[in-house]
Length: 196
Image (cartoon, rainbow, N blue to C red; front, side, top):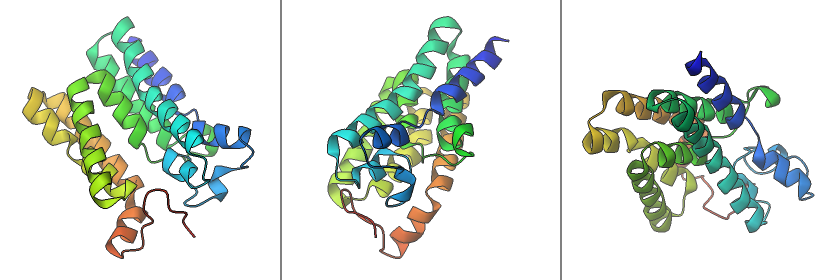
């Protein structure tokens, strides 16, 4: 019963579409009609409103962290892994938006920061260094999230944690499939650049 609560609460927290809510409140209409159509912070940044994009990033990160934190406090670590994973699933496939959500990077980082802070910090560092070097948000995300199973394995040697990171990375890569195609074709917009 406790694990079911962790799953349901994680999903419901993760499915809150902060990017959509904030852009509507900010007078930009439906963010899904702008740029890539994604509800995440990178696409919100294409409105030109940096504070709104930052707020989206923070709130999407907190979704994962809050889901994990509640399960850690009230249940246990295994429940927290489930809650964090389903917060990501909620962000990627929110029932309120016909299961068409964001790409999960911020929510994944929030989940990892709350679950195993060292992995979360390392992933954030990889994202930042890749973003500075190449200025592609998607490439930075793929590098950061893609390396989390390796980080989990070598830092903790926990098969369940490593497996969780592997499944999360697979989902994030799947949601970035169009970005991967554009990166290969050198058509991906850089950070802060409006997509035609």
